[in-house]
Length: 584
Image (cartoon, rainbow, N blue to C red; front, side, top):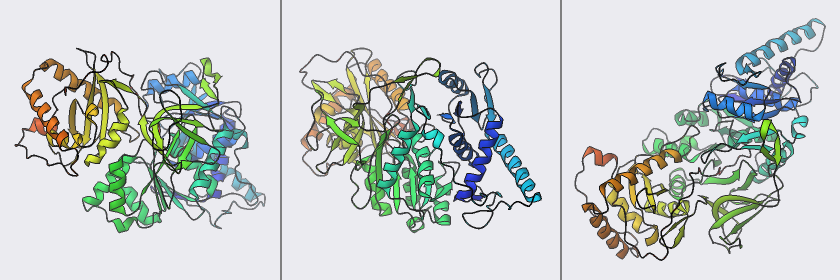
């Protein structure tokens, strides 16, 4: 069953019938098993029905985020060698690749519905059996259902393709790379995921995720595989409406990114939502980026149920998923998938050791997009994720973030690992490394998300009790919340820009700014309190409005230098997708 919160329902059989009609319309327009198309759009019935129709036709599907600029969408279409662009918002003709046509989703589905109605009327006029809903015995709200005896869609041609799915990396370190996955690998990974999560036909799923990304798309395929009910909400950011949908439809499984759950907690704390309105949910699943410790603990305290984390990537699909009754980290690797954690020399680490996550999976990608939409095969022996994490004694994986090692005062540091430990101070933390222009040394800027806007000096002292001396921040920036990108994840590029501005400001002031020595003394005092369970926080004077918006910590804490200062800093990166989805 598909329930649209904007109005309308379709049974599973009805979804198949409309998708079959759309597939017929696609073939009339020259799109078939020899085609490759770019598909983009908001979360609507039209997007879902068109996707399933493309899969039934055996078309290679390249998914692009709806918020990608038009010129970039056109560039991706040209690079992938697509025959057609299918969208809910027409691209300007000036940017379309030569010879590439586009179809508007609403018009495509409307034409398919019209043709299906005409065919049904013709069958009725000839004495054929009227189209009825085989799944529920009633015609769906949209007037569609499968004809008696019609087999469900099986997507066989799509699953047989080596280039069934194309997604792109974030592109934060340069030009996005096209990742090509086979239909067989997608199907196998969905089966592993369904077995681990134990969804049933009685479940009601509410994915607050864009379906053009791997996490959201995987939920569509899991919904179809398990025969459960899907509640469709176009705007994944309207958490207030999601709460209404949970109560109205008895939702049992929610999937969302961490920022969505933070908003939900804020609604509860602000008395705009009651916890008992959420009682039907049996699994609160989270992905898209690493789950911060503070958010996980706060959610469990407030809602009375844990967030179930998961880990995967565009290249490898789902890798590990946490489940009840004992969810720890991202859970254990899925059946048939092996995960090891290696040190910098490539040696396996014992339980609890932090290092690079390396995966061996049969669901790995086919290759990368090459010139003209060709596929360049890749090795499949071991997948080095460039993520850092650890395994516990029972094999549960915890992923901390991107590898991005930086070297500072003789130590190798992982910013996301530092941020994970820093969150024990009582708020979400992001750590951004920046290379100074004046002396080329590595600076660490700590961003703290604090709606109550405690002064940065207070956070500086708290942080000093949570991280080692060589991990202390050069700057602390307090924000009411982290900036988010179009998919609801923390916008690392915005934080990086802010961090560079902070360090540039410090360098303009010079190394002997009067506040710097005060900061050094406060750090040293905090170090003396490191063994205390709860360090004392001094009262701060009233601050000006500018200071209330942002207060920076004096830059450099004098530490013993054991190696020459590093001359380079790693490239800009986004965190790898940590998600329950297999697709992006």
